[in-house]
Length: 633
Ligand SMILES: [Zn+2]
Image (cartoon, rainbow, N blue to C red; front, side):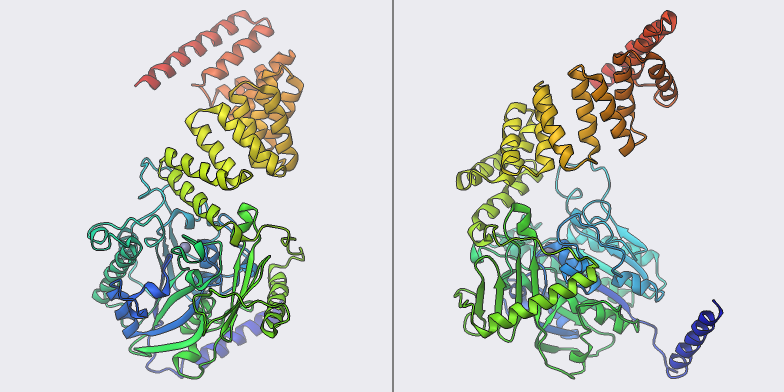
């Protein structure tokens, strides 16, 4: 142990002696503000040459900082792209390739590394998809405070439940900064507004009524202006680093893609990137070399004098700030989002004036001649194609090392090309938004259009089934889920939902088969075990019911429902003593559970304890009457 300790001490001494005396007029480390603006196309920002929108805050920031005209995200979806910004890693390296996939603790985030440098860290998000308690597990790592959404929301509106307006987000951030004045700070602010549905508040809803996407951008810019005014007023602006960046763009119908996520064209991968440095350093600089949002994390660490992690796919932008290089960096693109719908994932390389997209039908674009990526020049023998394929193979092997996995990439060449499916995806997305906004009739109509295009769209059948389940039309729900499960026999969720719907219409045999099939695929489903136990009780197969409730209790030992189910099965089997014992114990913490006392009455009666049985039955009746009264209120 000792030599290590000595070395460590020596190391600390060396670092101290290297930094302390050489900086007599040492300025404190800069505050760092990372502003990610969701769904922001570079070519829809005023300082990027677009005249259809006013973005005074971004324009002013560009005047005070360095503006990169050619910055690219490796991913066109929010969580994946943000994970790349926070870790400096490509999606295949950090592994967050879809919503809900945890960000592994083995990949340090910029927040963690700055916190280790005594930064005070906080994150303010504008969308529930970045909530670390639900769809973005692990994203809160390294943050002293992470502004998640309330766990239970009473509102049916999307505001406050799914999304926060930019002005709310920045106010949360400003309040936190006011309460935590001691620096240095690292604050991530996420403005979700430009993401669809496009519903800017007034006056932007009026000014931009014919192009609401731009209205959302103008509104997000006004929230940024509010935040920057706050920073200036509180004296934090001067010695700060401020990064403003889009997480991805928006299709806006180009290549027939309405929103984003499926394709890797520039419409969804080219984003604005502005870096304001401390003081007046670099003010007004415009860098035209191609860079990546992957480069943000190493840049921030360098600006904070922190060392970069060993594993990274991005590089600091510092050489561009000092005019040391104008070299373009190759930009890789990855999207696994199509896999969600059963379509092939895509990979791309953007380098030396061309873009190559690996797909079932590959694509090659000559960007100087064809910036809109309209004319596919792909030829397998083209040197650019061969070079791109070699680069992609290299990236894949590097990612496999970083992931520490040797699992081969899934065989996807037999899957449909997303280019053939984009109309379907636009409709599926519209239906999802309609369902989220409690417009089931719109959602239903849109999903029926998908099925007219593709009767075998399992995604559409699943979404329709869920709508009918919520609406209480269990016959229709069962029909849709059955259809989805036939198309995707390996989809445990489709089979579980089919079982749910069949149980509701008392087709217990059918429910049993669907639930057994679902659990064979994914054995650890608590809800499915519980429901199957109840189905077996209904089928009078108490031994099988007992097995399911016991399995459910292994998954969630405290579940009251599973304990009651087990007692019910024991009573049916005639095992009264065991049932009575566990019910008595449970009644101490579940004193108001009518079903419990009902079962206890049966157990006592089976044991011949008439008085106790009568007492429990009376209690059960009283409790269930109270419940009815409470429900009527
Ligand atoms: Zn996004």
